Length: 189
Image 1: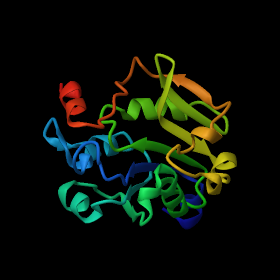
Image 2: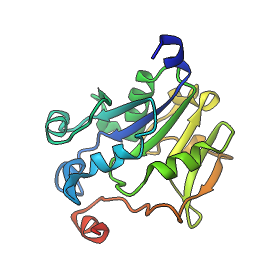
Image 3: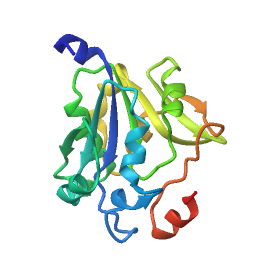
Image 4: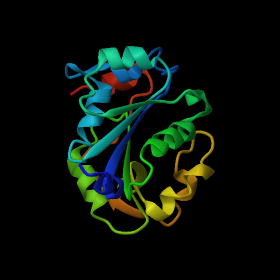
């Protein structure tokens, strides 16, 4: 893709930097239907031209244990500060894009159809909701991306999303995430 087009395109950002303390290890590599959770999450971004995966804790092991395809890998050295540090590192790698679709590595049932539905809504930001409960993906466009430097702690864009369009997606996906081993048992198909 030409450099100018690369800077105007939409991109995906997969956050996968956490240590998985509550899970007891790297949940990104936990198996679901014969594949690591991170691969399921990455599949939701398949329709985008460019995807950045942010790793942190156990980055080398996750790279070795999952097929990340053509995604660009960014390692966030200060991942322990929380989701905002991972977001800032990922967004730095995506500087110049007009739109970023953010998904989490521990939500294996978010699909490309959900991403497409949320992306179709205009405005500075949109987020999926499931039976009215906010979730992912979150789509952030240029005006809000410029405020990414304000992000702190483990809230991600939450504090900057006031007034963002909410897009009901419970008919398309199950938003459950995997935080502890018991969660993995619940989401097994």
